[in-house]
Structures are given as structure tokens and as C-alpha cells.
Length: 151
Image (tube, rainbow, N blue to C red; front, top):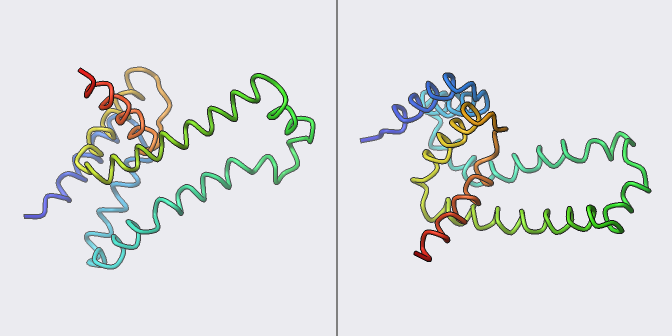
């Protein structure tokens, strides 16, 4: 029995209550794909290319200040010649490593995605957090699972 639609509906309701527009929109898009009958084409395509497309859009957004000429050469040099700049470089390298671990975790244990999504919504609502992507949530989950395995 396919339980995907009820789960997506519950996720949509929780997202609306938690004011998580991105999760609500994603749930609606996936439900629309399921209702359209094109899920056998579109879901595998999204599974194969969706993450890369989403990261591409995010990277374009992040690089906009460069494209608009709002970042000077002096500011670029700052990233390579100061302690905060070097920490930013290390932080970026560490984050990409952790995100890779998060992706591996989501592939190995896809059942955790629902819990991470609910946790993201709860963190936004109750801790005034900023919603993060599922890859970062999975990276933190991977770290917590690693710590748990030590005990």
C-alpha cells in the first residue's frame, strides 16, 4: 500500500502550522506530481537530478554579489589573508565534508528524512531558528548518530 500521499499531506499540514513555506511548497509539488500520474517519469528524474539542480540554484544565489560587482578584490584577498577569512575557508571545507556524510546517511536511511524535516520545522517555530536544508540537517544527524554510537 502506497502511504506517500498521506505522509505528504501530514507534512504539508505541519509545514503550514509551522510556517515553513519551503516544506509546504515541496509537499504540494510532490503531491501534484503523484496526482498527475506522471510520477513514474518525474520522481526518478527529480531523484537523479533534483539535488544538483537545487544546489546549482543556491550557488547562483550565493555568487550574485560577485556577478553584480558588489565584492571587491580587497574583500576576496581578505578570505585568504586573515584569521576570520581562513576560518571561513576551513568552515566551508568542513561543511562540504559534513554535507557529504549527511547525503550518505539519507541514502542509507531514507526513513530519517521525515524526522529531520519535522525537527527543522520545530526548530524554526520554537527556537526562532532559520530553516536549513535537509542535507545540513542530515549532516548534523550523522554527527549525533556517530556520537551515539560511541556510547
